[in-house]
Length: 196
Image (cartoon, rainbow, N blue to C red; front, side, top):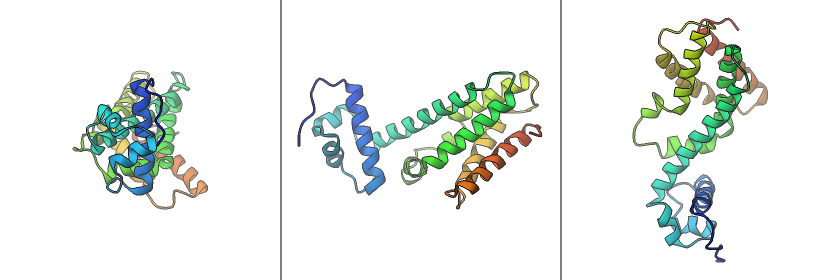
């Protein structure tokens, strides 16, 4: 095993370990992958792994957090591409981008949320994606674009409904996917009283 330069920043080493773990978990499965497999793939010593993570479970938790933050950043970028007062465009951007991200990252999402689920179900009622949708619903209501009695409940409802919709079989077909994305946006609009 060739060793990588010892001068790399800790954050870069951490990313290399996470990238190696993600690839191996997806190829071999979480249970079948060892810490040694990860360190071999990342070309680092085992001690380097334990400087960053205490276990495979901890690196999986880090992958889950990275998945959510990357997704949230992508969704935020799509929403911000539409400036107020185009609240309908912002809501459509949120729904479409979030759905696409889930559709395109199915195996990774399945790994970090289904095969090795988080310790509690709080993410279904409070996470940065739900929070961003709740803020969008509030700002749209304040801007007169729609009326929402309970922005948090509506955000939770829409987020979880979107999850269910993208998990349906047949979404690999691009024509079906486009129909699904259009239907999701329509349901988002209807939920806030917009005809779209």
